[in-house]
Figure 1 (cartoon, chains in turn brown, green):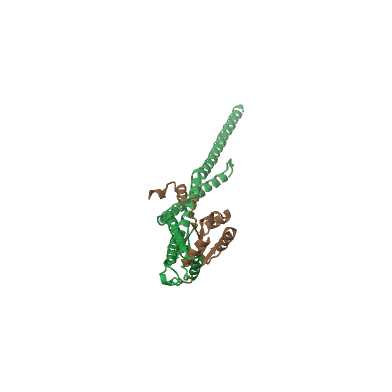
Figure 2 (cartoon, one colour):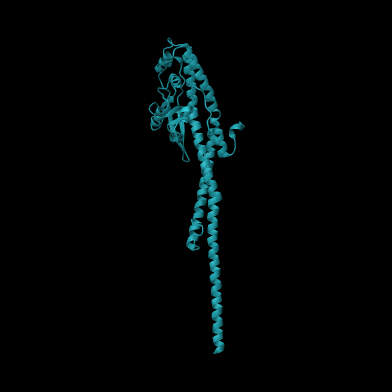
Length: 110
Length: 217
């Protein structure tokens, strides 16, 4: 099991990176703007990474082509997390998507 | 697929095979849609409220980080964070459900007991431990989230696409092809009747002519 472990990467602001380093993640990149975009697209092609944690604000600011690539890749998985300034409203929330696809709002019932 | 196909037997055969093909495709797509929806409901149960949970946890984690920063300097926290070893491992496998790739994670517990974290507990305070603790918690949530949220999003998009395809086949393509086949067969029948009547008329005329010849002779 030890051999086939994939790495976890964090690309976010420096505070977030410090926090995740305390949780034991080695590969943290405190980058912004185009540098972050370049890093994301570099890591997306790297099979040795399992999960890439990216701050929401960074994903929002990305080029639409990169965003599409993020959505399409299953490995590594890209997870967007709120950064130190708090969460932002996502334009297309899951509940809305579900409602459009199935015609029923499932999230409200429970 | 011309709007006005030639009324020949060849075209009729072609149209009929097209209808058959469309029916088959429709059936398959319907099955695909059902399978996707089934899978979707399986994941949905796990995904509920993970996102909001993560948001609140994240806020808590940033809060504790800020407190730790107030007690120590940023450099101290940084140096402590650099000393942390033993990265939690994940193993990501991609599962393929009807062409939709969904990540499946195999994780080890990210939480670590205090003494195995790597930084010295003498030089640091409990505030840093708290930060590490809360971020480990967040990490745990991220593992869960990455498995479900991405998968759900992808499944939903695929369900939508498949649904649209099923509907367009069912309500547009198949009726159109069917009406085309019907049109051709009607035209063919019409032509058959036409020629039948023509033959009858000719026969009658020929008989009449023969009779006239006989009576004249």
